[in-house]
Each structure stands twice: as structure tokens, then as C-alpha cells.
Image (tube, rainbow, N blue to C red; front, side):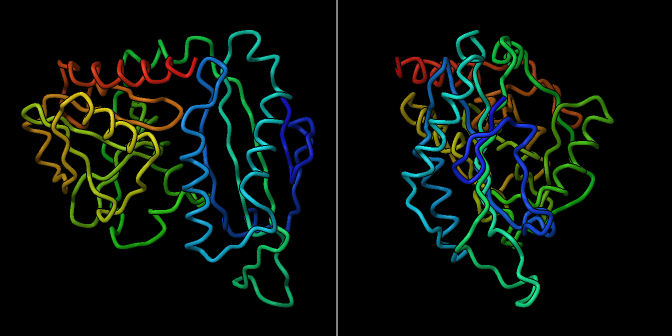
Length: 288
């Protein structure tokens, strides 16, 4: 595997950064994760737009244009082309940190004149999408998150809470953990957005409930609207699962995955989930 560090292609094992980097010392950084589908990027521009928006909101000014990230990403894909040639798609991640901490200024003084930018590419299993079609099992994370904490709305590298929640899920034999916010409402998974189907309507929590509005989430809402399905963003109290007919999770790597079970609720149906998933793959196939 080949990675890209500040524009330089290197073997992934040699993709090194300073031990004084903001990301290493304090978890200060943002990232975007996406993938190739049948060898081609899908919705890449949306990921770059979100990255650029996060940078602008944080007041981080990169010393180059976003087109440079496009170029570095394409070079990284090309350098890992052997996997694509063997029918294995790539999971890609762009990570941006403010660079090296200046101890004379203070650990809170963030400047981005010399950022650290790393692009990783890792191959997905050949049967990745077929295997996910079977669905996941999810649990409720044992801790609640304050919904007004601003960090959740960024694709931030500070992932320790999500790591703990995913470890909890795995300890129960589940694939994902779903967060409750401080009001007791369902929000999102450790790396996914959540949709619940009630009375034929697709429901998902709005960002102000304390979650990151994912790129695939927005695509699913668009696709559902095109299919004539009813979609509504609203708070999702835990009790809503009693009346739920289906549930699924989304992100830019897995696409749409049905939930077989969430907490104590078993889902026998995945009719609308399959409809949305099929429409997503049809849109992806349209790239060719």
C-alpha cells in the first residue's frame, strides 16, 4: 500500500509524522473517509466541500487550494492501482491537522501555515458490499452525549468516545453502537448515521440533536425523495423503536446497511431499506 504525506507518495509503513503534531498530541484534526466503487470515486466533491466548510468554520486556512487535495488523492489512487486491477475497491481517508505544536506559543495556539496532510488508501475485501447486504446488529451505547457540544458536528479526529462505544458493541457481539444524546434521543452510530422507518416514513435525527450529518446521509435523503418516499428529520426518542418497522445505517464506505436488530428490537422487514440501497447502487453504476 502507498500513502501520501504532504504531497509525497511513500510506502504506507513509512508514512510518518512528527511526534509533536497537533493530531498526535491532542487529537486536533479533521478528516474525510470515502471510497472507490468499481474503481471510481463517488461523491468525492461532496466530501471536499464538507472538508473545506469545516476548515472555514474552524478558521484554518490551508496554504494551497482544494484542487491540490484532488491531485494528491488521484495520485494516491493511481499508486494503489494494483488493488483496483484485482477487483478490490479502495477505502480512502484524507486527514488534516494544524501541523507541529509550537511550545513557545502554547498547545492551544493553532496555526495552519504548515499543516500535516495524510492520505491513506486501504483495499476493501472483494465481497465487502455483498457481505454487508446481510445487515448488522446494533446496541445502544451505555453513555449519553451532550447534544449541544459542538465537536459532534465536525468530522474530527478526536474519536476516543467512538472507539470506546464500538468496543462495547463488539463485546456484545454487535456491529455498531448507537448514541443517545443528553435528552435520551437516538442520534447516530460510532461511524454511521441512523434512519428509522415508521409507518412507511423515513425518520432521521437533525444535526442539532448532536450528530454529524454525513455525506451518505444527505445522498440517501435525496434518493428517498426521488423515489417518492416520505422523509422527515425529527428527534428520535428511544421509545420510537416500539413502532419501527425497519432501521438502517449509512456512511460513505458501507453505503446503506439494514439493521437486523437495534437494542431489543428485531426487524423482520427491510423493504424500504432494500429499495433505497438498490437506488443508491444504481446511481453509483451510472458513473460508468
